[in-house]
Amino acid sequence: MLTGLYEGALEDARARELLEPLGDLIARAKSAPEVRDLTGLIPRDHVHIIAEIKRRSPSKGELASIADPVGLALAYERGGASVISVLTEERRFGGSLKDLEDVSQAVSIPVLRKDFIANEYQIVEARAHGADLVLLIMAGLADEEVARLLEITHSWGMEALVETHSEDELVRAVTLGARIIGVNARDLTTFELDQELFGRLQHLIPEGVLKVAESAVVNSQDVTRYREQGAHAVLVGEALVTGVTPEHTVKEFVEA
Figure 1 (cartoon, one colour):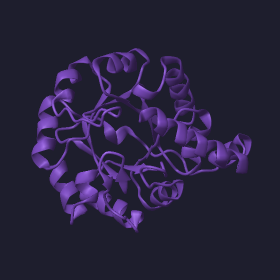
Figure 2 (figure 1 turned 30 degrees about the vertical axis):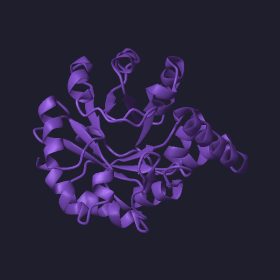
Figure 3 (figure 1 turned 90 degrees about the horizontal axis):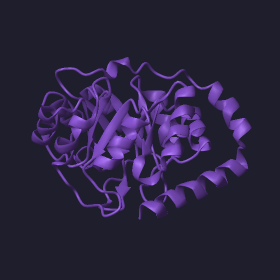
Figure 4 (figure 1 turned 180 degrees about the vertical axis):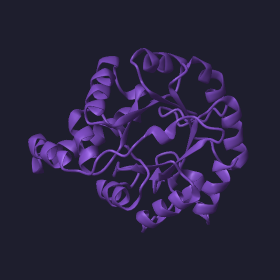
């Protein structure tokens, strides 16, 4: 499944590159608004909430239509979210680069482009559409690819959330110098959840690296569990987009 997701994302990126070559995209990215200050993501007593805009997923199917992603992002921001995560993968997640750009223009907090990123074009594309962070998934990339993508990301002033799903992947991420490391409770090859994965692995993340717990959040008790296990930030998607009052829910999670 993960291989297919990367293949589809890269095929779509190549099609966009035919319309806007890398050189033209670089020029546009250079004129984009400056990267937002990420120092606000430093560890604190309460966890940071990375609030996600996601219409569907391969594991759950349709989640929410989200006709107004900007309105949802603003509700997240009012609730106290520290980062907005925007799915831009179209085929399986129903996202778009337009969502990313519209949200980035509307909010004042950092925005993460969440996609299956594997080349320079996609990173420059993220910056051109207003992203401050990008997602890199260790399970889908070789070490040399991650190292190069981290270098490109940092050269644009952005940061990368480096996602892991196992001890081996986490050790690789640390060795490569990732500054923000996520532990995803959902295995992207089987889509099975392991709610205790973050708790077992977080001690391997060195001091000075931001620890992000991803997935398996249904309520504030789940956020509290991650906080008590050492998470600095928690990425939440499904529980927010399927809820009735996202602003209130974010506030509840921030205070958990």
